[in-house]
Amino acid sequence: MKMRTLGAILLPLLLLTGCWSADPTQEEMLPILSSSMEEETPIKDVPLPDSFSLPYWSGQTLDPITCPDGSQQDLAALLYEGLFELDETFTAQPCLCASSSYDAAALTWTFTLRSGVTFSDGSPLTATDVVATLNRAASSERYSARFSTIQSISGEGSTVSIRLNRDNKLLPNLLDIPIVKSGTEKNAVPTGTGPYLWSSDDGGLCLVANRNWWKGSAQPVDRIGLIAIEDQDDLLYQFTSHEVQLITADLTGTTSFSTTGNIIFSDTDTTAMQYIGINVRREPLNVPAVRQALSQGFDREYAISAFLSGHGKAAQFPISPVSPLYPDTLETAYSQESYVQALADAGLGEGHTTLTLLVNEENSFKVSMARYIASALSTANLSIEVETLPWEEYTAAIRSGNFDLYYGETRLTADWDLRRLMAAGGSLNYGGFSDATTNALLAEFSSSGTSASAQRLCQQYRQQMPFLAVCFKSTSVLVQEDVVEGLSPTLANPFYKLEEWTIHLSED
Image (cartoon, rainbow, N blue to C red):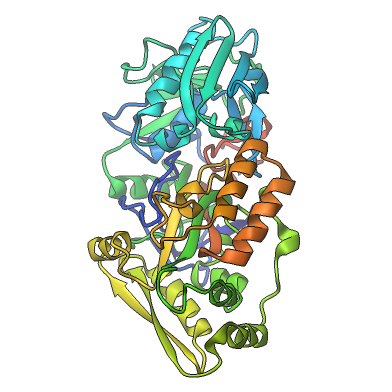
């Protein structure tokens, strides 16, 4: 996790969400603030606030399954909890679930709910609540991609059963979906089990500490103020004027607006992978050795530092490098000399080949990454030309297979299911890759979920290179300087380990 004080900057503000895009070409086309991280400008000290406040979208639901991305999802992390929560390594940790077991022969997971958990209104958590929420999530835009292996969900009392249509040993990694009390989902603010509950007092709308919280009264403040926002400009104003003390942001976004303030940002890892898609049906990209060589031809660490302002982690394989499943022992060091030799060994040492790398023109960070990679891959015998296209033309070209290479991004699920990208006929397999051994190893990894099976799959990936993993993006939690101590955000929860926070206010 990176923490840094920012002075006068441009903030790319793409609000963090629980959204899992199903399309590797899917740019998060929400209103955002984007920037390069330039020289810091000293700013006079900002006094501590009288109270800790957060923004919310006025008039929008807080149902965590259907609410808008951004501030509503941030608040939902304080109001609701899932069966599991993902830690900093994308490993599922029990939350509302006390225990789980998997019957591989019956393809059935069984989850036992934690005893003594109640909703904020004092009513007990039951399997009925969990089943109702998960069934709604299965048809939602935000969570539906997680249910591709699920056939049915049932439950009674304190036991929830999930029957699969194929093995998935890492299913708990997908079950951090926030649970709401059945029957309250149509309320503007459904009832949850989280550390805070929605309320109001003389100071207006607020969140107050949930005295029924199963973890006990470990909240860092009893009251969190809520500031209504109408649009992105309003959100920006409320944050830079320190009316609100925390927002979440993607610092490699698309549309730029400037802001200033004494701000700390803390990066958090995501499952959003950036990569180079390859059309394996075209020469010479139909030769695995050529694709292997291309993967060696650019410095991922340098690219992230120079063109993503450090907001990402280099990855040679399609699993986040912070995951314990990432095969770091298989990595190879970058060497331009080794790359040139690998190209020659693959048959590109004579003559000249020209390939085109597509990238969508709306995101300057991706364009810069694509241009660097194209330049690094170009040699005396190989030229990579970058073609920037408007979003609609870019996606149309990729989906029709009218490309050599493209710079893409997709948000993977935390069970690292790569079938859509690597399996024959996969919905995201735009390059037409097909390999029986890869299909078998994908199935083995799904059924075992072990480091050994991940390593075997990644060894096969390295031999075939159906696409070139580049990095996994980071997103950021931005807070007013000196206000929050103990910040340790995760992908879906900017308030992870809230019970360990200290919030400093002027009255302290």
